[in-house]
Amino acid sequence: MNMFIIDNQIYIRLGFFLGVFLLMALWEIVSPRRRLKESKAMRWMNNLALTALNSFLVRVVFSTAAAGAALAATERGWGLFNSVGTPSLPAGIVAIVILDLTIYFQHFLFHKTPLFWRLHRMHHIDLDVDVTTGARFHPIEIILSMAIKMLAVITIGAPAWSVVAFEVLLNATSMFNHSNVLLNNRIDRALRFFMVTPDMHRVHHSVIIKETDSNYGFNLSWWDRIFRTYNDQPTRGHEAMTLGLANYRDRKWLTLLWMLAVPFFYTKR
Image (cartoon, rainbow, N blue to C red; front, top):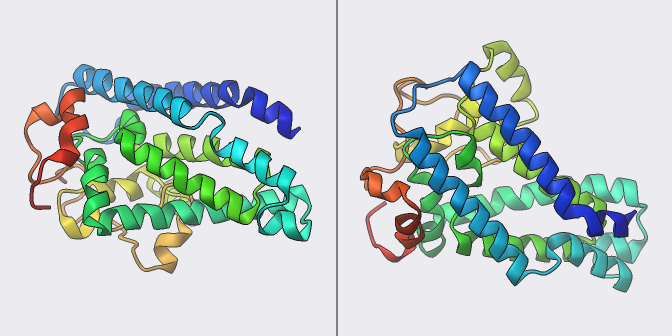
């Protein structure tokens, strides 16, 4: 099964990406949460161009990516689960949870470390937040993130199937929780017990720094509650809140070349 997943992971991931993307894009049209302030066509063109560039670069830099690292670790007996002979199913389930916690800490680190924040702030300068924002990350951050993920995969000895499942889940939940969709309040409250919702994550994209520095989770909502970085609602409410960063209000930062240049400009946070 592992080899089948490795050989077909591109098609598996692409299929889920397109399916979730189309679903959330349609939901945003039918029932939007906020009125967009910027040109949707311009934002989508540049955000999706960046997504395509990132996908290409990951394939160039990491030929087999995290799933390949998992397969190599299994074959060589590397990592905790492989060394103790943990069965694939429980190992995979626990690995998904550990990898999600790893992404939480990585996200926290990229906010708190000035050098990494230079990269990550590109994700935050989007003046609207919708399904395309979920894949809008600087290429250098994407490469660093993949390296961190591969190190975690090898360290814990995650089964290859669980790594592909985690990447599909992370990609899908990132598009979901960045989406500009209206969700019933009761459903939102129920979902927040175990997963990050659009209203929960939108707080993280607030222009107010104390709100930006909260709600770091992408998939499981537990980590923000456990580590006390949870912020229930934005101060100004979801309709009135301002998104983005205070020092990046010029629309030029929404275009691809300027997005790529963000880390090389110094501005106060």
